[in-house]
Length: 175
Ligand SMILES: C[S@@+](CC[C@H](N)C(=O)[O-])C[C@H]1O[C@@H](n2cnc3c(N)ncnc32)[C@H](O)[C@@H]1O
Image (cartoon, rainbow, N blue to C red; front, side, top):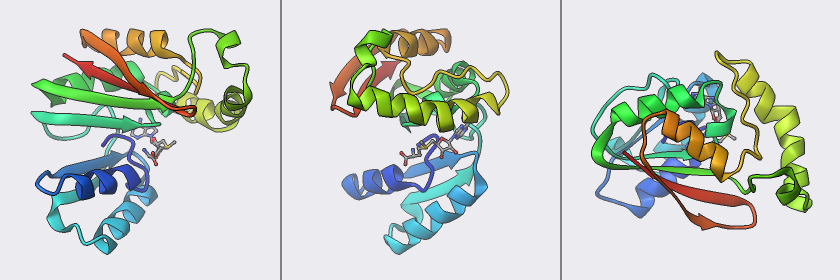
């Protein structure tokens, strides 16, 4: 689970899939400390661990599933992250990317949710990306076409939007 933050999604996945093991990675050390505390409190034992690592250099290979929840657009180098996920994933594996709901054009996003997201993007997500190497600054409202472009540059060939809510959209990405 790349860009796992406090590990909320990692812990939920471990609870939902009791025979699977999960690793959460985030480049922010204090978040990883909190994630470890939460996993211990949830009693998940050694099926879940958390490590400080950047999206373009986390450890391991042959993963069946890589997930990125609301984090790809925060990264400085999402193309580099996509290349690294591609290297780390089993050939039969899937990368699930959850991103804020957005269309491909500004006019698609001129609604209450899009307006709030443009605010978060300006004050938080875009500065976070710009503070890192490359600084691609996708922002929260990149839209499916731009996300597809990023992961295709990273070496993936299959891309589908598989779910959406008013707040999020889910992409299934495969080698
Ligand atoms: C909006 S938070 C989402 C956290 C978590 N996935 C969740 O849904 O609660 C974005 C996360 O991406 C992490 N992040 C940003 N750039 C990163 C990078 N290059 N490598 C790893 N993590 C990164 C941040 O530290 C932050 O925890």
